[in-house]
Amino acid sequence: MFKILVRDNYDEVSKEAFKIMKKVLNTGSPVLGLATGSSPVGLYKEMIRDHQENGTSYQDILTFNLDEYVGLPRDHRESYWTFMHVNLFDHIDIPEENIHVPLGNGDIKKNCKAYEKELKKHTVDIQVLGIGSDGHIAFNEPGCPFDSETHEMELTEQTRTDNARFFDGDINQVPKSAVTMGLASIMRAKKIILIATGENKAQAVKDMIEGPKSVDCPASILQDHPDVTVLLDKPAASKLTLFK
Image (cartoon, rainbow, N blue to C red; front, side, top):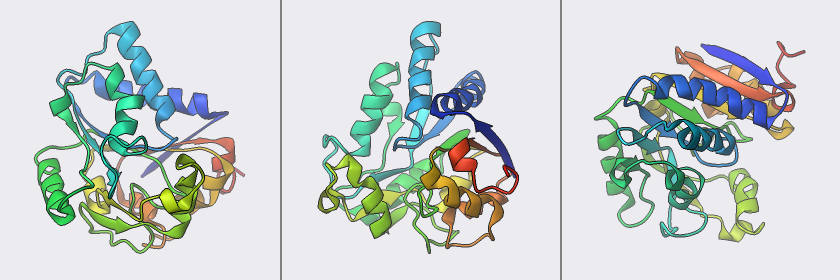
């Protein structure tokens, strides 16, 4: 079930996302499911600000990230391990041992099984998501089975093209696959917030909310989740029937 909130701009969307996150943080020691990419950066800035100004502690909080590129060293500037430390972890008091990011090097199948096993020991209280322009969530590309758990996913050319902006505009630098939580893994979270801004996300948002539930739009699986808040700016909401 979707709750849809449309705000004027990215900053307002990020502040609205933080209001939801803050309620979860106030419950004590929640398990957070975190995402990378440009969509959640504003939310993470709000979390850092709250930690610095209000002393909200992450000492007893566990985090699980959605995905990681295959083949990038953890210290690579575009690895999601680095992204999360630069944009959140280095600025809050979370112990390193409480942080879980998939490992994209070594025995990938073994890494996927180990990550899913650890994830299943816990219940994610709130999962942060973005959405790709092709409707993917995490790195579950179109065609990914709805019952998938943590796995290696070959990235589509569209996804690699979209992400080339992080690699000096050079698609050849973008890894060809990633380790990702599966769609079934994501659906186990108690609460989900999905952040989407910009006109380039409008069709994917429409397909997720108003289209048929289909592996052609992996995000459409969220139609079956009981608690999903979709946070949009006006361009991202522009193709929704309800917005018109």
